[in-house]
Length: 559
Ligand code: 1PR
Image 1 (cartoon, rainbow, N blue to C red):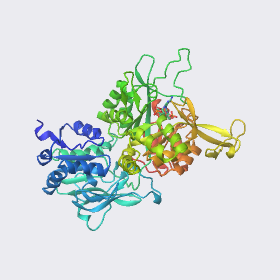
Image 2 (cartoon, rainbow, N blue to C red):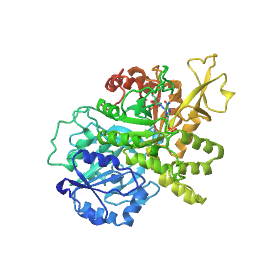
Image 3 (cartoon, helix red, strand yellow):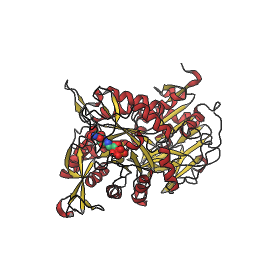
Image 4 (cartoon, protein in one colour):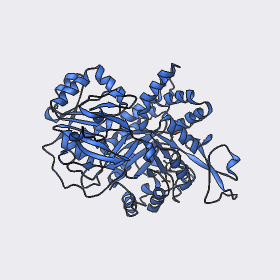
């Protein structure tokens, strides 16, 4: 059924499209999934979201006849909205694992961002659009920030100029959207570009204009002159079961989440779904859930956590990250689950990114010890494949195919500061500290830990960061056990060390106590985002006042 309120969705099965489903449903529409090429040809409105690798997508679309149907549908000027890869596939080809041929409707080759010009790759976060006239679906949102996550992009040229409805700048000008007649496509994610604290909801208004063109009202465009990628402010919810068996938001003091009372109960700061919804309304650019006892409990057995994600993602239209316990696992009945199955369940429940802590440490340790071959084994384990073949070409191929999945993988580092009297005392990268150690030590290294800080490992945060960047991680969430919950500011020395060492985005975490701490970390380091927990949970500093402060300091934020 569905009639006019049905929208056809092409889910080619290799990416995470739960968020777009949630957004469509939120707008009151039904989803009809494409099963055959005829479903495409008969669609009233068609959305093609795309996450994953270009080659894998084209391969599926070509094999089942969908590519041809898409070609026909678009040539007939039927209502079409491509998202992310759904934009890229319209071009002639992509350099991603290629060249690989696309549908060839728009002149141009999709290439990779160049990190050598100082821009971190992937391009992750909120950037603003230079909107041309007659973009139709973007008419209301000129100057607003929208959410991107991608490493590949198409660039404007004389040949494709007539298609372009907006551009965005990230080192270079690239095509952020196209429009011709009823055919639209966007490089960003409208389904994750929400925000109720806006005059109106940017991302959903774009979708509404496409899906319900008659019902949408044109509003006055937002004022603002954003020109570059905004620094993100992220709210983090550490979640675990309390002693009554309820999942609660908790918060540690240097990772200790129990009250210093006789009962020694788990600190309870609220309900996860409620708090996440509140932070979305308050203007958080992202929300993270960390299932902090996931290393102990098997997350697929942890149905309440999946339920929390499901409920949250129905109403929260900014990126949701979830971490804790993502690794392969054998349950009590001897059934083996790959990391992919665990991660997929999180994605299906509404996560946009997953974060990996302990398992990334083990992977990096192996990588450092034994070099490439083994790193592949761990790469596959983390990224859902088990290597059966030792054929080098096959491995290369697998490696490139899964690389784009890695864009959704955040590696969470939990380091503890260890003081040194000399930088030569240990074989790991150290820093000269501003405040001397307890015995007057002038240096420190940052030791990685696993299992929620319980166990120190023979690898430093610097070495881990370099290794996971090489393995293809999309982003680094950089905690610091010493600073966690202290409210004394981020560990600037650590954040500087790591954000200068890698060219993927780094999220600074642990220690925020006031708005100035955010401007400190953004002006003194190359962090792309800053994350806080305690000050938001205890309502000491509202997210909006952090943003206002950053704005006053001339730091680009999403307003
Ligand atoms: O190892 O893959 O199972 O993942 C476990 C995840 O859980 C890791 O991301 C790890 O950081 C997290 N985790 C484990 N134990 C704790 C704990 O607190 N006992 N929490 C924990 C990590 C740190 C931050 C915190 C910031 C900001 N929490 O997420 O939110 O430090 O806090 P603040 O602003 O109040 O200072 P795996």
